[in-house]
Length: 196
Image 1: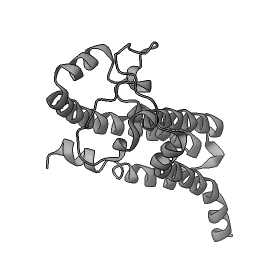
Image 2 (image 1 turned 120 degrees about the vertical axis):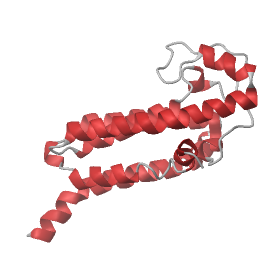
Image 3 (image 1 turned 180 degrees about the vertical axis):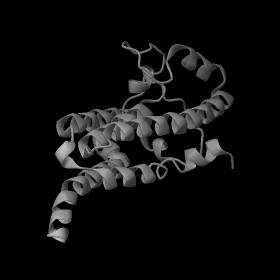
């Protein structure tokens, strides 16, 4: 298994070391609490909307797809989930605060650029192999990351999945966000009670 495949199959777990560092270094006395929460909310909104169109295939550990998803947010950018993830993690860093805020932001952005450049290149190779001209047309009209202001007018008009199904698919991400926020918020209380 190459590095790209490893990062793709383990992409749900590879951010764990960064999360641990953020939790360890967090200091709510020096945070951008509301800006962080806003970025987290924006990121999860982007993710949720993307999952509404892509469905459960976003949780796969096998590279590929049965059909090309090019509707909804995928008509603006080819990788809305990864953009959402970056917003969430930058939001968590700002929310957590601490004297190492800028260094943590740099690490998070650098890490995600590295990881997602590897994953995206693997996905693009596979989708080109599976879908050929259809994917090439999509790739030529929709940017990899920076979204178009107006949706690409493809012939595909997929309907979004129902909200209930989307919540079930996105449940794990929502649980993780809530858990991380909870730990950051109770950390000062635990430390105060432990050391006093």
